[in-house]
Image (tube, rainbow, N blue to C red; front, top):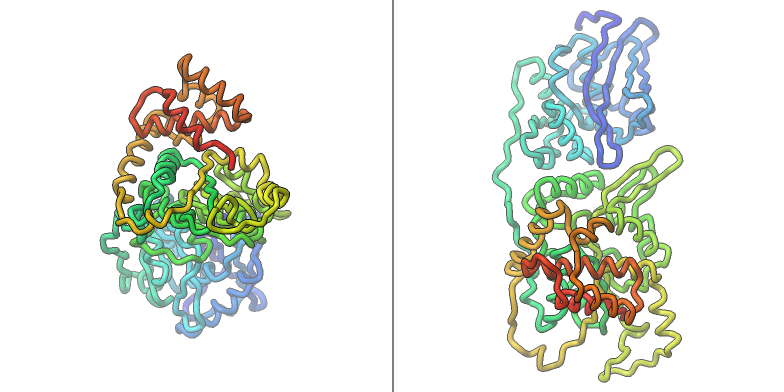
Length: 504
C-alpha cells in the first residue's frame, strides 16, 4: 500500500469536444481526510459522472490501490460542459494514481491523455480523436491514447502519438519501467484514384464543358433534363476533376468526420467528399442540429460536393436553409445552452426534371402534365435560391446513335490538370476562388471594356437578371477567361457565361 500524503494535488491534461474544436481540460484530483467518497465537479454530464465507477473497477482489477479517502475531481474550466464521457476515464484514473503517490506527478505535464477504460483496465477508443490530436500537437505535448485511435491521430504531421492497450502499459511508461513506442505509419497514398472517370460519359460535351468551368471556379450548378439523361452520372464525376485537397483542407474534412464517428480511410483522406442526401432529409439532417449540436450533410460536404438530386422534391424549408451557408461557407447551430459553428464551404450541384412526370418535351414519351402542374412543380424552388446558383444547364437525352458510339473524350485527369491551373491563377490573384469573390473584389477582378459592358447590359435587359445574377455572370466569365489564361474578359467569355445562366 503506498504512503498517501493528504492534501496532495495532481493535474492531468486532456481535452473535451466542442464542435470541431478540442478545448483543453485540466483534470485536477485532490485527496483529503473524511468519509470515503468520489465526486466529480466541473459541469460533467451523466456519461462523465459514470466514469468514476469504471475507473474504480479498472484500478482495482489492474492491482492498483484505490484510496479509501475523500476524492474530489475537478474538470476545469468549470463553465465548459464535459461530454463524451469515456474519453475522461484514463486521465481521471491517472490523476487518482498520481495524487495517491503510485505514479510520478511531474512527468504528467509532458502528455495529454484520453481513452475509455474497460473494467479490467484495457483501453477502448473514442470519437473525435483528430481534433484532439491537432490541438495536442499545437500545444507541443505528447499524446497517449488507445491503440484503436492511433491511425487517425497520426494524420496531422509531426503529431507525437504513443498508443497503449492497457492502463498498466501507460503507468509503466510514466514510471520509466517499459517505454511505449511512438506510433509510426507507413507512407500514405498522396494521389489516390477515383472509381469513376469523365471518359465513361458518352457525348454530353456541352455539360462536360460546363462542369469543367464549375470545377475551376467552384461555381454552383443546376442541371435540368429528362430522366436517364445522365445528370447523376455527370455529377458523380465532378469530384474527379477537382484538385486533390491540401493537407490543411483534408484535416478540416477529417476532423468533421471524426466528431461524427465516421471511419477515416487514411489512404483516401485527400479525396474530396461527395454527399448526396435523399430528398426526404430534414433540415437538421442537412444543415445540422440536435443537442449537443452536430454537423449535417452540408458540413460533411465541406471542401467537396453536395449533390441534391430531385431538387424540387426537397422540403421548401430545407432548401431555404441552404441560402446562408452558400454565401458564407459556415453554418451556426444555436441552442439554449450553447452555440456551435461548423464549416460548410461546399460546392452545390443540383438536378431536377422539367416537370412532375419528368418527360416534358420528350417526343418519345407522352407527358400529360398541364402548364399549371409544370409551373407549380418548378416553383417549389424559390427565386432567391435559384438566383444563388451560378450555372443553369439543360442536359439533353442522348440519341441511340450517340449511345452506341465508342467511348471518346478526355479523361478526368486531363480535365483536372486544366482546372488546377485555373485555380492556381485565381489563388495567386486574390487568394480565393472566383465563386467566393465579394462585390468589391468583383469590380476589381472582373473589369470590362466598353464593348463588353454594352454587350452585358443588353443581355441583362433581355434576360431580366437581378444584381446578384449580374455578379454571378461576371464570376463565371472570369473563370472561363482563367481557363484560357486570359488577363481580360472578352465578349466571347461573357456569351458563354450567359448560356449557363438561362432559367429552365
